[in-house]
Amino acid sequence: MTQNIKHGLFIILGIAALLLTWPHAFDWMRNGGNILDPFQFFGDAIKAGGTAAFLSIDMAIAWLVFMIWVVFDAKRIGMGTKWGWFFVALSYIGVSMTFPIYLVVRERFLDSKARTAG
Image (cartoon, rainbow, N blue to C red; front, side, top):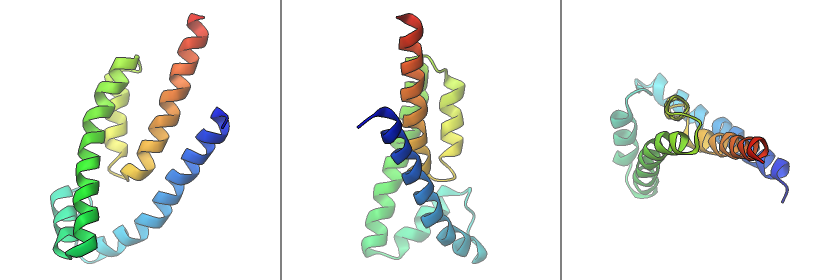
């Protein structure tokens, strides 16, 4: 799979995640939810029990790992800590949207860095 096709797929999946998840977030906010309060957000999702609790706990932990990793990874590869924090902030819109976008930006940054060095 070429880089452009893979990156296009990542971006399409990120946009799909955004479009499929946010209508539910808007419903939840209309009912008094605060999207900037992850404790309330995940707490309300876990209360439903069963599959919702499983997916909410799984996603909360994956999101936490992403937020820690992206800051250190961006710094480690030379993009800078500010870019890492930018992607942490963007992940509040949705980690399932932000993660593929970060992967595209990361790979393109590393490719650009390799071309300049070589």
